[in-house]
Length: 201
Image (cartoon, rainbow, N blue to C red; front, side, top):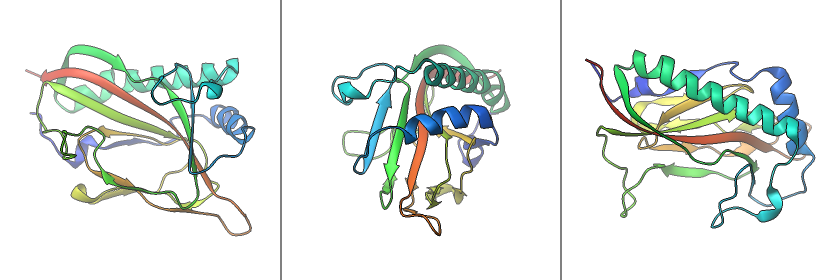
């Protein structure tokens, strides 16, 4: 029987391999300096993306697409069946990105799927939207993702994959440099997935 709750926050450790992480980390470290947040992209979103930040490196693109495919496969073949759900329709995903966050940047408690007044979209089927993050580096302290409504906090390590219903309120805590370092930057690969689901009979 399907229920909403903490168990729908899923973490898969070592999801990305050290080799994949090295390719992504090296690429992101090679990019120009930025303030607060910088997004690099595979497919352009006119209202959001800087046209100069397209990812053209074929190795980086290959790693990102493979991580996306494996995430989708895990969600549909493991996570949904274990959660008592089955797919009515698979409605694709948001464009795949790499995001760099500067130190002292935080994300206050929020929902990724909101009503016009800013409150979370109701927890109802059949619509089901998942947010996912692959953590790329750990050249910082802090940066935990926290779900205050569910008493769940993840201090991520490189290679971790986390995904969760987009209605769930969450926050990203402040990032600080590790001892001996002058800067702290947090690198992630976020993807949002859209489905229509029903309870498994």
